[in-house]
Image (cartoon, rainbow, N blue to C red; front, side, top):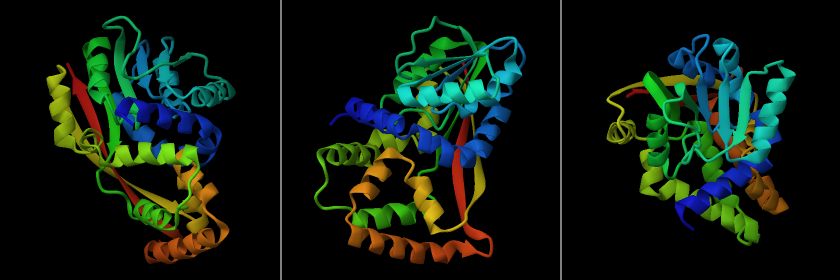
Length: 285
């Protein structure tokens, strides 16, 4: 499997789980997206491009701020686009154009957008092409703003990943084998790992023509009521959902017990406390 094939697998998994993801994950991601909006600082009359919009959280936060102009929101996951369209319609937001499109090949004319943004949506593979496209599409004086996870997993995520790997089925289906290979590539390939290293990202942005790049690191406190909420949260990603679904009953019970024991170490009076660390980039040509 190569990086392009892995990207398509990831898109299919996001698409398959779009409704669950929007219901479980998106509410906890809203503070992260609002911090990005502050850095983007959208103004009335500006046209904004939202790269890898997912279920439309960022686009729906930005769109009311740029009226009477619009947001163009793109993603490779078709079902995520459907959920995003429903979100916007349900909120009465009419100035977003959702399109199924690859972030590495954006078919819009040069210098069209005042701002380009992406909330945890820069692709793991081929993001040098995404950076090239952003530089091509942004107007002089515009900005390209995005965020990315730190290279160190949060305590709850690390516990979930390690416990899941320990109890995962030794006889995966063909679909799960394919997903496992995509996950393995994303977690071991030097290109993918470099996306979580700010100096590497800054160097790549400058290579693509962004002369001014500022990086801000932010931490967000998030609370899960109990271990089952942690499982529901990380299980809303397709690759984790497949692992949990194919785990036999006895290993699944052992997984639940062991994860609960591990998470008890970071639990407080109000539940399981966790800290997310993200890097925010503001790049200008």
